[in-house]
Length: 140
Image (cartoon, rainbow, N blue to C red; front, side):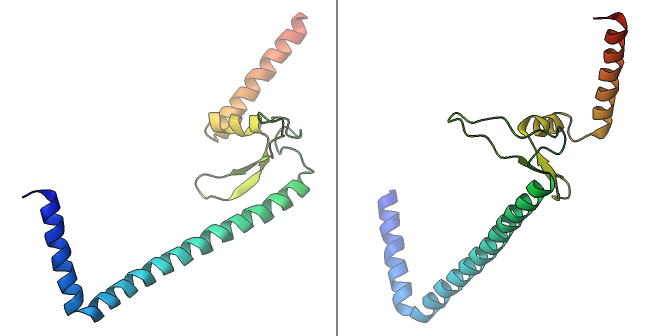
Protein backbone atom coordinates (compact mmCIF):
# COMPACT_ATOMS: atom_id res chain seq x y z
CA UNK A 1 0.00 0.00 0.00
CA UNK A 2 1.53 3.31 -0.95
CA UNK A 3 1.95 6.27 1.42
CA UNK A 4 -0.81 8.43 -0.05
CA UNK A 5 -3.42 5.72 0.50
CA UNK A 6 -2.24 5.25 4.10
CA UNK A 7 -2.47 9.00 4.72
CA UNK A 8 -5.96 9.21 3.28
CA UNK A 9 -7.12 6.22 5.30
CA UNK A 10 -5.70 7.82 8.48
CA UNK A 11 -7.41 11.17 7.69
CA UNK A 12 -10.76 9.45 7.25
CA UNK A 13 -10.36 7.56 10.56
CA UNK A 14 -9.37 10.79 12.31
CA UNK A 15 -12.39 12.69 10.93
CA UNK A 16 -14.72 9.92 12.13
CA UNK A 17 -13.12 9.96 15.59
CA UNK A 18 -13.38 13.75 15.88
CA UNK A 19 -17.02 13.63 14.80
CA UNK A 20 -17.81 10.84 17.30
CA UNK A 21 -15.88 12.35 20.25
CA UNK A 22 -15.83 16.15 19.95
CA UNK A 23 -15.48 16.74 23.72
CA UNK A 24 -12.50 14.41 24.06
CA UNK A 25 -10.75 16.11 21.17
CA UNK A 26 -11.52 19.55 22.58
CA UNK A 27 -10.22 18.53 26.05
CA UNK A 28 -7.10 17.00 24.56
CA UNK A 29 -6.35 20.13 22.53
CA UNK A 30 -6.96 22.29 25.58
CA UNK A 31 -4.63 20.17 27.76
CA UNK A 32 -1.92 20.37 25.10
CA UNK A 33 -2.34 24.12 24.85
CA UNK A 34 -2.23 24.60 28.64
CA UNK A 35 0.90 22.47 28.89
CA UNK A 36 2.57 24.44 26.09
CA UNK A 37 1.48 27.77 27.61
CA UNK A 38 2.75 26.88 31.08
CA UNK A 39 6.09 25.70 29.70
CA UNK A 40 6.39 28.88 27.64
CA UNK A 41 5.55 31.06 30.66
CA UNK A 42 8.14 29.29 32.80
CA UNK A 43 10.77 29.59 30.07
CA UNK A 44 10.04 33.30 29.63
CA UNK A 45 10.06 33.89 33.38
CA UNK A 46 13.45 32.25 33.81
CA UNK A 47 14.96 33.70 30.63
CA UNK A 48 13.91 37.29 31.22
CA UNK A 49 14.69 37.17 34.93
CA UNK A 50 18.24 35.98 34.20
CA UNK A 51 18.59 38.63 31.48
CA UNK A 52 17.51 41.43 33.83
CA UNK A 53 19.78 40.11 36.59
CA UNK A 54 22.66 39.97 34.12
CA UNK A 55 22.01 43.53 32.92
CA UNK A 56 21.75 44.87 36.47
CA UNK A 57 24.80 43.01 37.71
CA UNK A 58 26.80 44.16 34.65
CA UNK A 59 26.06 47.81 35.41
CA UNK A 60 26.97 47.36 39.08
CA UNK A 61 30.19 45.47 38.29
CA UNK A 62 31.19 48.01 35.63
CA UNK A 63 30.74 50.84 38.11
CA UNK A 64 32.59 48.99 40.89
CA UNK A 65 35.48 48.16 38.54
CA UNK A 66 35.64 51.73 37.20
CA UNK A 67 35.05 50.46 33.65
CA UNK A 68 38.22 48.36 33.49
CA UNK A 69 39.09 44.65 33.44
CA UNK A 70 39.26 42.97 36.86
CA UNK A 71 42.59 41.29 36.02
CA UNK A 72 44.70 43.65 33.89
CA UNK A 73 43.01 46.88 35.05
CA UNK A 74 42.80 48.18 31.46
CA UNK A 75 39.67 49.15 29.51
CA UNK A 76 38.57 46.87 26.69
CA UNK A 77 40.36 47.65 23.42
CA UNK A 78 39.25 44.79 21.13
CA UNK A 79 36.95 45.93 18.35
CA UNK A 80 34.62 44.15 15.97
CA UNK A 81 34.89 44.48 12.18
CA UNK A 82 32.91 47.74 12.29
CA UNK A 83 35.27 49.34 14.79
CA UNK A 84 32.95 49.12 17.79
CA UNK A 85 34.74 48.30 21.04
CA UNK A 86 33.50 45.12 22.70
CA UNK A 87 31.97 45.39 26.15
CA UNK A 88 33.79 43.65 28.98
CA UNK A 89 32.95 39.94 29.28
CA UNK A 90 30.80 38.78 32.18
CA UNK A 91 33.08 36.19 33.80
CA UNK A 92 31.37 33.46 35.80
CA UNK A 93 32.14 30.23 37.59
CA UNK A 94 31.17 27.36 35.27
CA UNK A 95 30.32 25.07 38.19
CA UNK A 96 28.13 27.38 40.29
CA UNK A 97 27.13 29.86 37.56
CA UNK A 98 27.86 32.83 39.85
CA UNK A 99 29.36 35.97 38.36
CA UNK A 100 32.90 36.86 39.35
CA UNK A 101 33.63 40.07 37.52
CA UNK A 102 34.11 41.77 34.15
CA UNK A 103 37.09 40.84 31.99
CA UNK A 104 38.55 42.06 28.74
CA UNK A 105 38.67 39.59 25.85
CA UNK A 106 42.36 38.79 26.39
CA UNK A 107 42.02 38.06 30.13
CA UNK A 108 38.82 36.09 29.56
CA UNK A 109 40.60 33.94 26.97
CA UNK A 110 43.53 33.53 29.35
CA UNK A 111 41.26 32.06 32.02
CA UNK A 112 39.63 29.83 29.42
CA UNK A 113 42.99 28.51 28.19
CA UNK A 114 44.04 27.47 31.71
CA UNK A 115 40.58 26.07 32.50
CA UNK A 116 40.15 28.50 35.44
CA UNK A 117 42.99 26.71 37.27
CA UNK A 118 44.79 29.10 39.66
CA UNK A 119 47.71 26.67 40.06
CA UNK A 120 48.58 26.97 36.36
CA UNK A 121 48.39 30.76 36.58
CA UNK A 122 50.67 30.92 39.63
CA UNK A 123 53.17 28.59 37.90
CA UNK A 124 53.11 30.84 34.83
CA UNK A 125 53.66 33.94 36.99
CA UNK A 126 56.57 32.25 38.78
CA UNK A 127 58.08 31.27 35.43
CA UNK A 128 57.83 34.82 34.09
CA UNK A 129 59.33 36.33 37.26
CA UNK A 130 62.25 33.90 37.10
CA UNK A 131 63.08 34.81 33.52
CA UNK A 132 62.52 38.52 34.11
CA UNK A 133 65.11 38.43 36.91
CA UNK A 134 67.51 36.38 34.79
CA UNK A 135 67.34 38.79 31.83
CA UNK A 136 67.64 41.88 34.02
CA UNK A 137 70.79 40.42 35.69
CA UNK A 138 72.41 39.55 32.36
CA UNK A 139 71.48 42.87 30.82
CA UNK A 140 69.40 41.41 27.95
